[in-house]
Picture 1 (cartoon, one colour):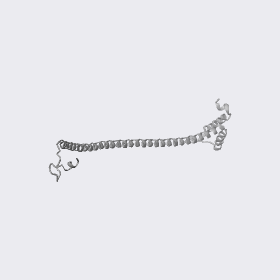
Picture 2 (cartoon, rainbow, N blue to C red; picture 1 turned 45 degrees about the horizontal axis):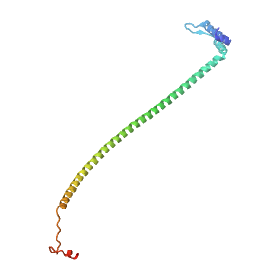
Picture 3 (tube, rainbow, N blue to C red; picture 1 turned 30 degrees about the vertical axis):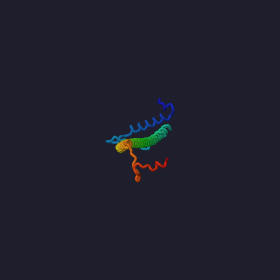
Picture 4 (tube, one colour; picture 1 turned 30 degrees about the horizontal axis):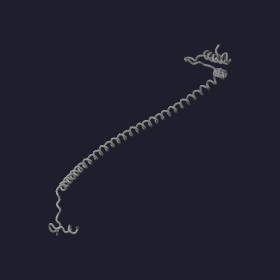
Amino acid sequence: MSDYDALDGSIPDTEASLEQIRDHVEQARSMPMSASVMVNRDELLGLVEDALAMLPEEIRQARWLLKEREEFLAKARKEAEEIIEAGRQQAERMVERTEVVRSARRTAERVVEAAEDRARAMRLETEDYIDQKLAGFEVVLERTMAAVQKGRERLSLVVEAPVEPAAVEGDEPGAAFFDQEMD
């Protein structure tokens, strides 16, 4: 005895009805030179209708549930595909953003490196320029120092030589015109 026999008495009736249909087809007269048989359509349809009417409500509900399940699965597959597609698109956007960030960082590094190179070159050029100017200034200073030294040497020669008072015009030699009046 199956689980269906214990739950609902209609299953054995349905089985009996289906067995009658099978017996009816097996006992039907064969058509000459064919595998087909002749059955009374009305009798056979009546037996099928009785079998269908005897099917338990659970089987109808199971068929309905199967149909709903297929619809639900189709809807779930569609939603899953949409979610996967949205995830794929988001991942692509994230990868693009990441790639943009990487590219921007590489560009920034190149710009900073170029700026540092340019600053280093400008510093070296500036140092060379200042060194040239200082060297030129040093030459001018050395010349100036040499001229100052020569001037000091000449001045010291002039100061060391005895200086004689120069005769004033109109004075007679030996006459001290002013010397007499001061006494």
